[in-house]
Image 1 (spheres, rainbow, N blue to C red):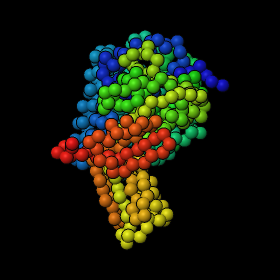
Image 2: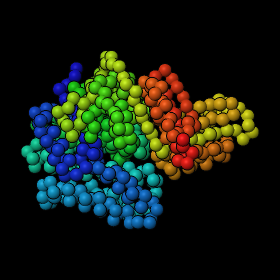
Image 3: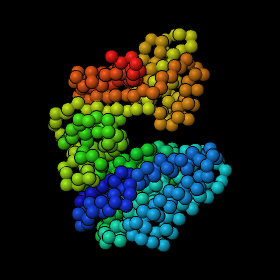
Length: 431
């Protein structure tokens, strides 16, 4: 039976500074009588800044602890702007930082991904401590919940796989009790922990997925993601001038869009909601009264063309060294390597003596190792500086528009979707 519980998720842009946090508080004020769990991301570009801490620790070119101290001080400055000097808050932040500082004083023995998760998770812990304190100061009581105590995963650092049974048990035992009390439950997106209590992140931009996990396990009435756009749009407004809002989406259509790279929702978010028919809303924190986009079951809608652009693409053309056919055992070996280096294939095409794949550069070091190992067995041609354009519900005119000043390296069409790996035509060669 559906419970009278709502789950909200606020991303980094919605809590990027003191003014943005005040805006979140004003939104939450309208829900103070609701049973509400709020998932919050790291502030603004904090995750990027914390990644620099990890990079500095492994490369020894800068002092990693100094960079971390700057990030800590920035949060303290915003706290001071919001609610003045607060010794208790400063102590709480120091408690979070101390074990990470001790880690940064030691020789690395557990690897880059382990250190990454322990350091980068601080962003969500900082932001939620700050916001929970501010809400209480504004007479909007809240309960700060450490998501690491609740969401349990395996030991896959940076891309933890959720242990749903343990997570469900923890939520049933702990979170429902908090929601019975007055006040919001404030928790972190993106993070969980292994059974050994090591911090594990769920993958970049994974806060949406965190909200879906809580929604599923709480049998929530609904889940809402608050963005800086009015809802789900037909294209990225930073790239395209003319975009329109999609009012309603089916779960299936939302899954397709996120699979192909639409950034508005994390790809893992929709399925847990679909499994329990929990409706989802994408709303604007700039215009909270706006209707946003509804995602749910039994949505029968006509969809306009939707364009998804993914930059930082690399195409690998893999062929056998003896020019024999690329057979099934070759493909099996190739995909074993992709799994080993946790590299997602965005598009692929198999021909007689070559196999082409398009991947995103997310971790350059990991991709470099993948290519090196592939070259031990195959010839590998690498084409960089590409972009992958996916058009759902495509029209011929939209395809032609996207191809303007582009060279198509790889193309695939299915019933409602076309994908094209493309590179820019040099300026001097354009007509």
